[in-house]
Image (cartoon, rainbow, N blue to C red; front, side):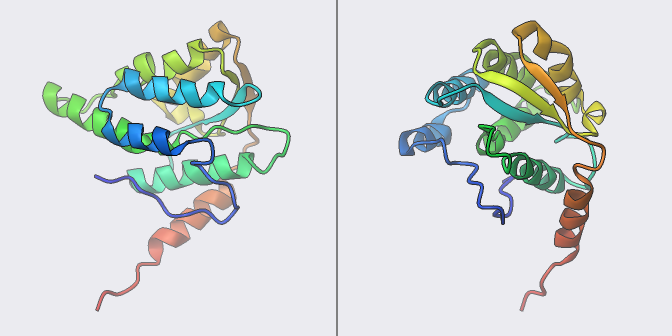
Length: 186
C-alpha cells in the first residue's frame, strides 16, 4: 500500500531538509537501520536540535492508515508554524516504515505491533542526540509507539511537550471532510 498523502496548505515542506541524494537513498533502502542513518544524517546538518511530533499512526482517530497519516502530517504542519522551532517531519520515512512493517508481519504471520520500528528506527534517532523535544499529540496514549516514545525519551535527554487537548480537533474535522469528498470517476 502506498501511503502517499495529500499536499499541505501551510507552505511547510516535509521534504525541505532532504537532498536529492537523501531522496535517492530512501528509494533504495530496505532496512530500518539504514533508514535511521539517513534521518540522523539529515538531522546532523541542521543548526540545532529538532522538535518532532509523537502520536498515533497505526491506531487513533481516522478509519484508515491514510487518514491517520494525514492527521499526523497536518499536526506536523501546525507545529511547524512556530518560527522558533526546527520541526523534523517523519513523513518522508513513512512509506519505508510501512513497507517494513508489512514484510515483518507477513514473515511472522502476525498482526502484532511491529516493535522493530521503535527498537531500531526511533531508538537510534533518539540516541543520536539530535532530537531536543517530542511534542505529544493529545491522543498519544492511544498509540503503542507514541507511549513507548513517551516512556523512553527522558532517558535520552529529550524534552517532552504535551500539546493542548484541542490541538487536533480542527485537523480531525478537516481530514474527515477530505475523506468524505470523493469525486465521481467518469
